[in-house]
Length: 207
Image (cartoon, rainbow, N blue to C red):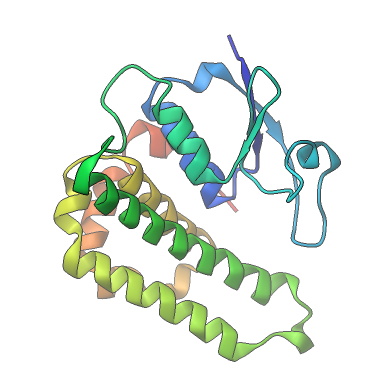
């Protein structure tokens, strides 16, 4: 029985992250999906209720409270299920995994911002230097994942790993020419494996 409503756009990597968590924790049946179609200049009145910044994903709880930002929603869902936690509850391990999860979100932020700049902004107003800076952020982050964090990612499909997988999936969707697999073969091998998980297959976006 659904007791919550998720404001949902299947092409958003942040929404996908929440959907993967719902699948992984067995909570999908608790949520009704409410499709929304927004851009930075076109909002949704229903989404804005209790969520004045108009962000997706947003999760309306049974009592009407609205949670927004995928990190907040995922941590909430992690406290609502029976089974292993998707983030350590305390100690140094928690901060390490939260920082890795934040790095995954930063990749998504840069990729989404690049998408808006290159597709939604009028061509005569696009800023190539800004686009190049976003690409550099992504490249540095992926190189760091390859060099420093493959063992952590392979240790379990937790919130950090889910975030990285969704970020890579979004790059494949929106910037297939990015060529990250050639530069990060270890990350590519890890992603090839986790992308076969039922939660990833069920939430795979299509343009």
